[in-house]
Amino acid sequence: MSLIDRLVQDHAEEDVLLEKVKAIVEEGRGDGQVMELMDRFSRNLKYHIFLEEEYLFPMIAGEYIFRWNFELMNQHVALWNLVEKIESSFRRGELEEVKKSVYLLSSLLKVHNAIEERNGIYEEIGKALKERGGMELPSEMPKGWSPKFMTTPTSEE
Image 1 (cartoon, rainbow, N blue to C red):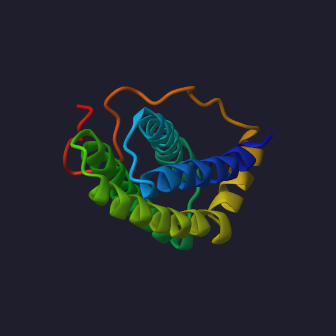
Image 2: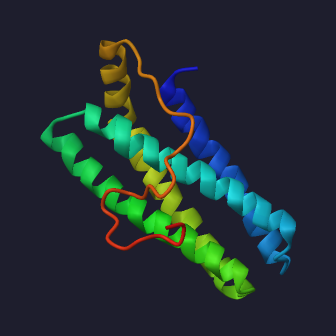
């Protein structure tokens, strides 16, 4: 499986996890099952953002791509902060807030993923990877890492 295929697969997995979270929250549950799903979603999304910002986006150039990367990196901050808010709301037992935020996250993620997949971003990354002969990526995100455009520390720090 190519790295680009893996990124697209990540998008699909994140969608499935978030749909499961939405279904459970709709039932009014804030139990361990939904927390586990949200934790998996959060780890997957944050690692995905880390790979894009640290390894993949820097490989591609050009004004068109730069503008999209700038937008996507701003969106990464919004997605990251919203995930942090959802996790915090879960811990406080604020299920109505969780429900609203999960629906917002789902909508934002659909738009974000469509930009990456359909506006040539992943295609350009694929070309750059082919020219390089591939790339070794870390298996996990460094502790305390946050998106490059983040201006305030996350709750993990």
